[in-house]
Image 1 (tube, rainbow, N blue to C red):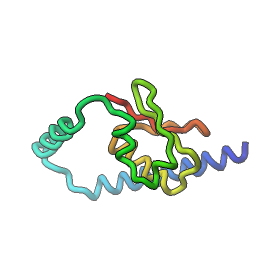
Image 2: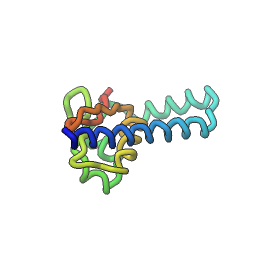
Image 3: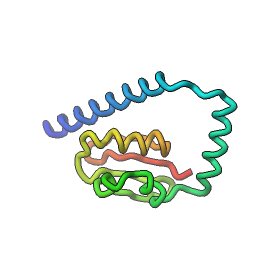
Image 4: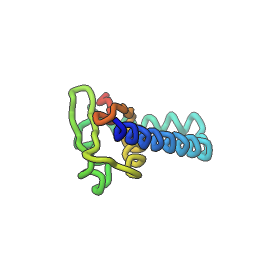
Amino acid sequence: MEEIAVLLGLVARDLKEICMELKAASMSSPKPREEEAEGERKIEVQEEIGPLTIERVQSMFPEGLLGKLYFEDTGDSIIIRPRSYLGDEFREVAEIACDQLGGVYIGAGKNSHFKIPKE
C-alpha cells in the first residue's frame, strides 16, 4: 500500500509539473490571428485522413521511447501503457499523446494509461 502511495505521489508531481509547463508555454507563445488558425486547421485535417492507427501513433514517438511503451488498439481508441516507470520521460509521452494526438491520461495505479481516440 505504501509503494502505491509513493507511486501516486510521483505521478501527481509529474502531472503538476506538466500542467505548469503547459500553462507557461501557452502564456509565452503569441496567439495566431483567427484567419491563420483556421488555415492551419484545414491543413491539419487534410494531412490526417482516415482513422488513427497504431503505426501512425508509434511514428510520433522517438525511437528511445518506443521500447518503453506498449501500444494497444481497442477498436475506438489507441491505448498507450508504460512497460515500466518512465520518470522524466513521462512528460515527453504526455506531450505527444495528449497535446499532439488529442488523448487523455487515465491515472489508475498499475493500470494507468493514455487513451487516444481514433476519430
